[in-house]
Image (cartoon, rainbow, N blue to C red; front, side, top):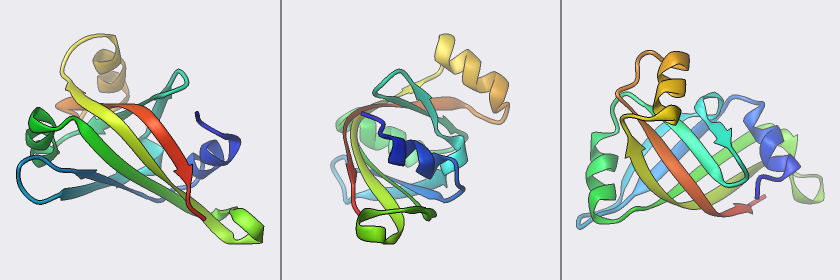
Length: 124
């Protein structure tokens, strides 16, 4: 699921938008490419210090959309830069192996946003 182009994007710093929606209008928060930790072929872990609105939305609807991009990675047809839209099913972890691993790496977190990727589509 994680293509070489996707992996190349993660080697460059850039914003990651995280869009969630519950019973109200969509909510968007952000993090950085460098904070994404890949596990296996379809899981992304994201350190969460805040993300309370995202957590509230996920209690109602566990779907998320992430976008990531890097101008330094060539896209389709020689385009300067590329990005991905990632659809996934998400939950917050506050204990367990992944939480402990991420807490050691990022001591500021209160939880870990775990995203099981269902689609990672290159946009550019």
